[in-house]
Image (cartoon, rainbow, N blue to C red; front, side, top):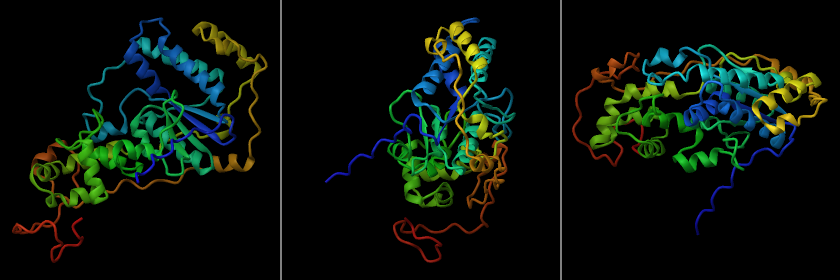
Length: 367
């Protein structure tokens, strides 16, 4: 008898009163720009993004909607690692003009935009998602960024959607794809690396990282027990410990980004004057579903005073990530210019042992 495949993760039904959609504007726009490479005056980026936005509004009918976007300049990750996205080239003025057009459309629809200096859209989405869950909303993050899979929960109250598929990505899909659940995804990326966003450990791929995490349980235990491995894997874990810990900091989503989380503003709706502007922008971008917007506008639904008050409460401050990993950091790794985790006290080399059995004095059984 074989295990049945997990049920697909579903989106909230259209019009559900507790559905909150959070859009990754920067991710959407960059993806179109990298494929199409538009010229100045060409609305290919804004037309594509706005068309998806309008389809989402009309087809999914979210009760709440907000957008997150990157801001120019360095982020907190650049202070940890100078190589963070260092080779990426700025899209240029044509792309910037397209973003401004998209922002005009969002303003006409009264959709708030989260932006904060030093923070990427990912962190803003993570922060907004947690605050939305705190007041009982179901959250759909519209993005193709796999880093956001860390936020998926077992109850399906936070899911990731690419904006096109009939189903979303939740915890079951994350486990099927990566071999670990959302809580371990940052540990997996810390070991295997994440493109130009985190170096990881050289020679360790996603499959090896997932195997190690299933065996040891966490990045901390994988690195603490590096000498329980054999051959090349043992050496890679030993030599890559500091790089892995730095990567863990880089890939962990922040949930304390500064943003104005105003649930009344996030409630979907716009007025008659807004509808006139929406129609004008629809003609400019040649999007029929915008041109056909109702002239009287779309009034916001009545809001619960209790929910609005709860949403207005400031989020609790988060503790900084712990760095108490018990690992040895070879001198070569300290060239990464980070503060390495504390090393254990020096001890004499131990003789070869039977790796399959617990040894006297071990704090943990070998698993």
